[in-house]
Image (cartoon, rainbow, N blue to C red; front, side):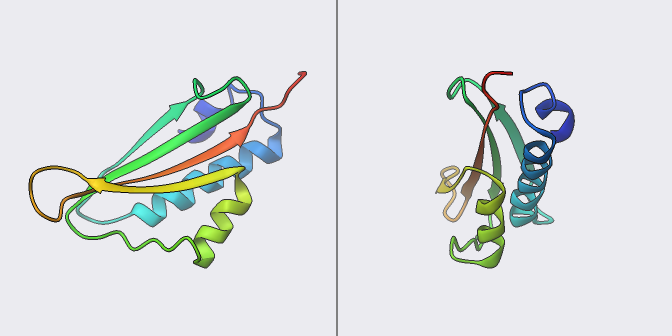
Length: 109
């Protein structure tokens, strides 16, 4: 799915492969048997970049350390990677965890 959506944007083959791998890695970080991951593609953040947001609502904490090897790999594949944790609802312990990755688009076609 990621390759199909992203291929409509001006990315080199290597940049496309990097973004697909980054989204796969971000989804793997979120992977829990009790949570669904929602993927949103956002090209409106700026004319020169494409951002992909992966969000999971979960009852169990998602242990993500921005100093981990997985996060290092994620950061190497894209131009920017961010992590955001927010309460997902009124129930204590419900979290919404979002990993956003951003890749610059080619300029000058």
